[in-house]
Length: 147
Image (tube, rainbow, N blue to C red; front, side, top):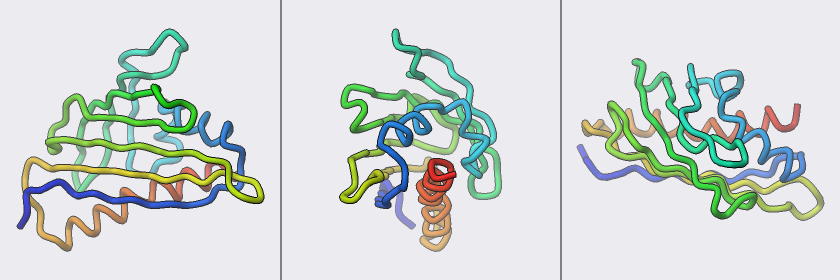
Protein backbone atom coordinates (compact mmCIF):
# COMPACT_ATOMS: atom_id res chain seq x y z
CA UNK A 1 0.00 0.00 0.00
CA UNK A 2 1.21 3.46 -0.89
CA UNK A 3 0.91 6.67 1.09
CA UNK A 4 1.83 8.92 -1.83
CA UNK A 5 -0.66 11.32 -3.37
CA UNK A 6 -2.94 10.07 -6.12
CA UNK A 7 -3.26 12.24 -9.21
CA UNK A 8 -5.96 12.08 -11.87
CA UNK A 9 -6.69 14.13 -14.98
CA UNK A 10 -9.75 14.01 -17.20
CA UNK A 11 -10.54 16.06 -20.31
CA UNK A 12 -13.89 16.57 -22.01
CA UNK A 13 -15.68 18.94 -24.35
CA UNK A 14 -18.91 20.48 -23.08
CA UNK A 15 -21.53 21.79 -25.49
CA UNK A 16 -21.91 25.13 -23.70
CA UNK A 17 -20.05 28.45 -23.65
CA UNK A 18 -16.98 28.82 -21.41
CA UNK A 19 -18.87 31.55 -19.49
CA UNK A 20 -21.80 29.21 -18.78
CA UNK A 21 -19.52 26.35 -17.65
CA UNK A 22 -17.52 28.79 -15.48
CA UNK A 23 -20.70 30.08 -13.83
CA UNK A 24 -21.73 26.52 -12.89
CA UNK A 25 -18.23 25.66 -11.62
CA UNK A 26 -18.05 28.66 -9.26
CA UNK A 27 -21.62 28.19 -7.95
CA UNK A 28 -20.36 25.74 -5.32
CA UNK A 29 -23.41 26.18 -3.08
CA UNK A 30 -25.37 24.26 -5.72
CA UNK A 31 -22.91 21.34 -6.02
CA UNK A 32 -25.14 19.09 -3.88
CA UNK A 33 -27.80 19.41 -6.65
CA UNK A 34 -25.58 17.85 -9.31
CA UNK A 35 -22.37 16.38 -7.83
CA UNK A 36 -23.46 12.95 -6.62
CA UNK A 37 -20.95 12.61 -3.77
CA UNK A 38 -21.28 16.18 -2.40
CA UNK A 39 -23.94 16.27 0.30
CA UNK A 40 -23.38 19.83 1.62
CA UNK A 41 -21.38 22.87 0.54
CA UNK A 42 -21.24 25.80 2.98
CA UNK A 43 -19.61 29.09 1.97
CA UNK A 44 -17.32 30.27 4.79
CA UNK A 45 -15.73 33.27 3.00
CA UNK A 46 -16.29 35.24 -0.21
CA UNK A 47 -14.08 37.66 -2.11
CA UNK A 48 -14.97 41.28 -3.03
CA UNK A 49 -16.76 39.96 -6.17
CA UNK A 50 -18.94 37.62 -4.09
CA UNK A 51 -17.18 34.46 -5.28
CA UNK A 52 -16.63 31.70 -2.71
CA UNK A 53 -13.04 31.66 -1.47
CA UNK A 54 -13.39 29.18 1.41
CA UNK A 55 -15.98 26.39 1.36
CA UNK A 56 -16.73 23.57 3.80
CA UNK A 57 -17.89 20.35 2.17
CA UNK A 58 -19.54 17.20 3.44
CA UNK A 59 -19.26 14.37 0.96
CA UNK A 60 -19.60 10.63 0.77
CA UNK A 61 -16.29 8.87 0.23
CA UNK A 62 -15.33 5.23 0.53
CA UNK A 63 -18.62 4.33 2.19
CA UNK A 64 -18.52 7.03 4.84
CA UNK A 65 -19.08 10.74 5.31
CA UNK A 66 -16.07 13.03 5.06
CA UNK A 67 -15.60 16.72 5.80
CA UNK A 68 -13.06 19.03 4.19
CA UNK A 69 -12.58 22.75 3.55
CA UNK A 70 -11.25 24.08 0.25
CA UNK A 71 -9.77 27.50 -0.53
CA UNK A 72 -10.49 28.67 -4.10
CA UNK A 73 -8.04 30.64 -6.24
CA UNK A 74 -9.39 32.96 -8.95
CA UNK A 75 -6.03 34.46 -9.99
CA UNK A 76 -6.33 32.92 -13.50
CA UNK A 77 -10.10 33.42 -13.86
CA UNK A 78 -11.99 32.69 -16.02
CA UNK A 79 -9.49 30.32 -17.67
CA UNK A 80 -8.70 28.36 -14.48
CA UNK A 81 -10.55 27.66 -11.25
CA UNK A 82 -8.12 26.16 -8.73
CA UNK A 83 -8.43 24.96 -5.15
CA UNK A 84 -6.39 23.66 -2.22
CA UNK A 85 -7.53 21.95 0.94
CA UNK A 86 -7.36 24.00 4.13
CA UNK A 87 -8.41 21.13 6.39
CA UNK A 88 -9.86 17.66 6.09
CA UNK A 89 -10.62 14.59 8.16
CA UNK A 90 -9.46 11.66 6.01
CA UNK A 91 -7.42 13.73 3.53
CA UNK A 92 -3.89 14.99 4.09
CA UNK A 93 -4.19 17.23 1.02
CA UNK A 94 -6.44 18.01 -1.95
CA UNK A 95 -5.28 20.16 -4.85
CA UNK A 96 -7.36 20.58 -7.98
CA UNK A 97 -8.31 22.74 -10.90
CA UNK A 98 -10.63 23.15 -13.84
CA UNK A 99 -9.05 24.59 -17.00
CA UNK A 100 -11.57 26.11 -19.43
CA UNK A 101 -10.88 26.99 -23.06
CA UNK A 102 -13.06 27.56 -26.13
CA UNK A 103 -13.34 24.35 -28.16
CA UNK A 104 -12.79 24.24 -31.92
CA UNK A 105 -16.25 24.32 -33.47
CA UNK A 106 -17.92 25.72 -30.34
CA UNK A 107 -18.39 24.64 -26.76
CA UNK A 108 -15.77 24.42 -24.03
CA UNK A 109 -12.80 22.13 -23.53
CA UNK A 110 -12.41 21.38 -19.83
CA UNK A 111 -9.43 19.71 -18.15
CA UNK A 112 -10.01 18.54 -14.59
CA UNK A 113 -6.86 17.92 -12.53
CA UNK A 114 -7.04 16.48 -9.03
CA UNK A 115 -4.43 15.33 -6.53
CA UNK A 116 -5.51 13.78 -3.24
CA UNK A 117 -3.41 12.39 -0.44
CA UNK A 118 -5.30 10.47 2.21
CA UNK A 119 -4.28 10.17 5.85
CA UNK A 120 -4.53 6.36 5.71
CA UNK A 121 -3.09 4.38 2.79
CA UNK A 122 -5.64 2.43 0.74
CA UNK A 123 -5.32 -0.72 -1.33
CA UNK A 124 -4.92 -0.06 -5.07
CA UNK A 125 -8.36 -1.38 -6.07
CA UNK A 126 -10.07 0.94 -3.56
CA UNK A 127 -8.05 3.92 -4.86
CA UNK A 128 -9.03 3.11 -8.46
CA UNK A 129 -12.71 2.88 -7.52
CA UNK A 130 -12.47 6.22 -5.68
CA UNK A 131 -10.68 7.83 -8.65
CA UNK A 132 -13.50 6.78 -11.00
CA UNK A 133 -16.07 8.34 -8.64
CA UNK A 134 -14.05 11.56 -8.35
CA UNK A 135 -13.57 11.89 -12.12
CA UNK A 136 -17.34 11.45 -12.54
CA UNK A 137 -17.56 15.05 -11.29
CA UNK A 138 -16.44 16.22 -14.74
CA UNK A 139 -19.17 14.11 -16.40
CA UNK A 140 -21.67 15.60 -13.94
CA UNK A 141 -20.49 19.12 -14.83
CA UNK A 142 -20.98 18.29 -18.53
CA UNK A 143 -24.53 17.02 -17.92
CA UNK A 144 -25.38 20.10 -15.81
CA UNK A 145 -23.97 22.58 -18.36
CA UNK A 146 -25.62 20.90 -21.34
CA UNK A 147 -29.09 20.59 -19.75
